[in-house]
Image (tube, rainbow over all chains, first blue to last red; front, side):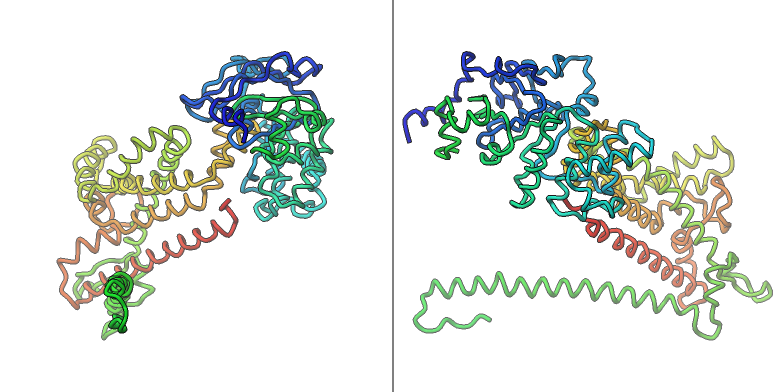
Length: 277
Length: 317
């Protein structure tokens, strides 16, 4: 191990220097993050994150465990609001509007920014009721619209053919991969602009994983997808842009192809070549 | 078995062998003995109550089981010129059902609301304040509940609504207070044991806290909340002393919230000292004990039914 790496594990790396920032290269971003700091009580989990998320593309966040990737995406739909003693500084703009502005309705924000979790979490209800849950809580009552949304969302999540004959049975009897696709269908059903995926395949077998990856590729172009993953091959396969996080800082961000072929930072190269992490 | 160490084995080994014997074998025999003793005690109790409880229906002047259950005619001390003693217990059975039903109706909504407060809305205050208070409540002896009911509730009802004050309402209120901690504790456990991912999943789809509670958390916890309610009902049904102190103990069908009445438990506690062992009256009281036992078993069966269903539906994530 080189002396330089030892130093890195002792001191958090400096944030990406602005001159190599990819911010300028993304036109019409959907999300603009500037100088985002996040503290859990006294410990700092995110350090001066600035990045732009491109519209209707897949952005992958990679990095070792505990580097702040999940914490970061949970800022985007304000899920961190649920945790005590979290303090957030900096600015997150969704279509130009600061999501921490007092005028922003967090409920409306979460309808625009959907989320799929690491461990599938279907509700103990029927498949049908799971899909339309977001519509139900928004007060939608028209039967025809609900039926249509169920079919459309399940088709979109590549689950329709497997479950169309048992829509009114409990979702708890499905396989893990099916439950995760149901959770994706549930997120799609409210027509979000952004879908956050927090390691959506980490608890799935390879076969189910490749189905979800196929699905992500089908959804791109229609939704902005931000996916956290531990699996670098997965990031390389499904994403257009990749951001490498380490110890709460954004180390490098750019086109996936570029990051994986010609990383500019030594730390990124070490991580993606498996020399560290 | 504490075999002697074969020749050649060190003293250390044999010492370890004997402590192994103490820890493992003796411990196992002791545990088995205690377990068997508990089973033996339960079986003996049930057999004894069954034997005593069936005595009224056998013998030279057998009581009709149908009359015992469905007649409201209770005159245990009537002489032969008045048509002989009558042992219809319908009045007490309905009294028990209505007073414990009233208690559950009053306590369950409050308890469930309190459990939501403790587990979802104010978890920190819930753990630091409400939980200890609830545990304190469960430790209060029933005679204290009864006495408080007698000195505060009975006069209050008498002054507000007229009548004697001793009433179905007084009994129901005292019992509600007694079973409130039981239901609240179990409902809180049920809600706290739900995976946090359900809450997050619901919030992430744009649900408000209240929508999350009533659409996701309460339905998911329902089987275990129902167990809590049933346990509360069981406790209310079997409670004797506190009820007997405030309910008035008059033999009448429960026709009004404000009238005094009796329950199975209250009539047993009232009459057991006044009857001669082996008399028809005494036997009828034993039959009522058996009935009480049977109903309690019924509740336990319901709880067991509710229990496994919980896991069968796959509500364990």
